[in-house]
Image 1 (tube, rainbow, N blue to C red):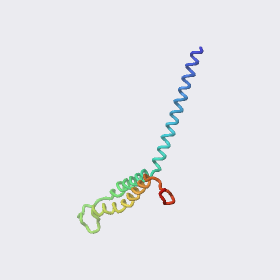
Image 2 (cartoon, rainbow, N blue to C red):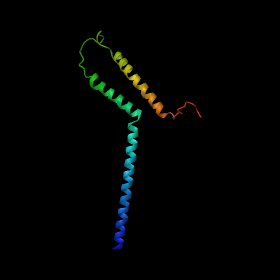
Image 3 (cartoon, helix red, strand yellow):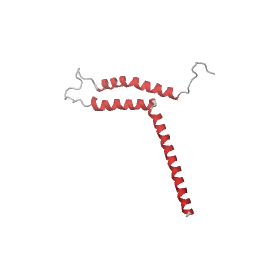
Image 4 (tube, rainbow, N blue to C red):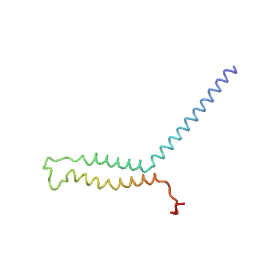
Length: 114
């Protein structure tokens, strides 16, 4: 009977160790996920994705009239692309500078390199 209780005790110990390892891995994964979702790259990507999705959903849903392509009141495709680039360019520049700042080593706050 002692041998059987030793086997059960060993199995319980292994279950406890495995459970502890799983919880530690879960906590590490949550920490990594939290760090990645708070990064400027992720936030900028979500913002740009939302803008692109909004453009595809609402900007292209307007009915197209079968009239002359070069009518004076209707902007051309190049004009719309230029306006889209004009809106997205500051966002891309901000995203680029945020990622450079995040990757740069921390400088001394006094401004002297010592």
